[in-house]
Length: 427
Image (spheres, rainbow, N blue to C red):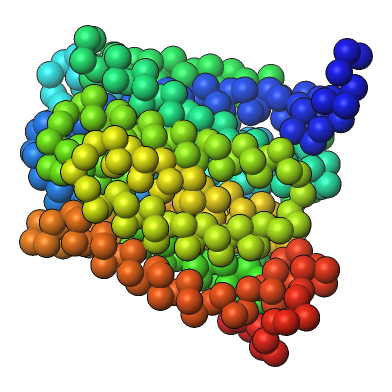
C-alpha cells in the first residue's frame, strides 16, 4: 500500500465497508440532484408569487408532515427491516420526481400543484429519513458510527454546494423542467444502489402486538429522561424554529435584500453548502465523539453571530460570507447532535429517537418557516431574523454553565470538567 498512514485514517478506513460505500455513493448522487430540484422548486414558487409568505407555505408543505409523521415513522423503522423500508420509501420518492417532470411537460404546473407535490414529498420524508437513520449504522461497526455519520453529513452538505451550483447553470439555460429531469435520474440511480446492497437480516424486536402509540410515547419519555440527549434536542428545537428557516427564505434574501435573481440565490445557497461541508468534513476527519458536545455549544454561539452578519448587510459578498458561516455553524450543531445521539441511544430505541431528531431538524422549521414568512411580511427579513439571533444568544448564555454535565451524559465521565456546576441540565 502506497500510503499506509493515510489508509488508517478513520475517514478513509470506513470506505472499506462495501455496503457503506455503496449506500453513501448512491445517497450522495441523490442528494446532489435533490438540491438541484429544490432550487428549481423554490425559484418557481418565487417566480409564481413573489411572496415570502408562499415561500414559508412551500417549506411547511415540504417539511410540515414531519411533525405529525416522524414519531410514527420511527416506530415503523423499529418494527421492520430498514433496508426494505428504504427501498419502498425511495421508490415512492422517485415517483414524485417523475410526476414533477410530467406536470411541467403537460403545462399543469401552478403554485397549488407545486404545493400538492411538495406535500406528497413531505409525507414521505419521515419514512425515508427513519430508514436512513437506522440503515446507515448497519453498514459500519459501532466504533465507526461517528465517522460514518459525519461523512454522510459531509456528502449531504457537499451536495448543497454542488447541487445549487449546477442548478445555477441548468435553470437559466434549460429551464426548471431540466432540473426536475436530472433529479429523476438521480432517484433511479439511488434506488439501484440500494437494490445491490447485501445486509444480514436485521434483528427486529417483536412489537407487532403492541400499540404503536405506546412505542411513540416511550421515545418522548426516553429523550426527556436522558440528560444529554434531552438537552441538545432542546437547543436544536430553538435553532430549528428560529434560525433554520433562513434556508427556506434564501429566495427572499436573493430577491428582496440583495436585489438579485436565480444566480444570487445560487451564490447564497452554495455558500451555505460550502460552510456546512467544511464543518462536516472536520468532524469526519477527527473521528469519534469526544469533544462533540462542546462543538454543539460552539455552533449555537456561531449561529447567533452568523445570522447577525447575514441580516446586517445588502452587500452580496458579505452576505455570502455570512451564509457560509451560517452553514458551518448550523451543520456543526446538527452533525454533532446526530453523531452523539447515535452513539448514546439504546439500540432498541434508535429508530424512534432518531426520528425525533428528524422531527426537530426537518419538521420544526416548517412551523418556523410559516411564522417567519408571516412576520417578514410586516417586519422584513432582516428584523425578523435579528430577533431570532438575539433569542439564540440568550439561550447560549443560559446553557453554557451546564455544558460539561451534558457532555458527561453523552460522551462519558472523561468529558466532565471539575469546574462545572452541581446540577445537570434538563435532568
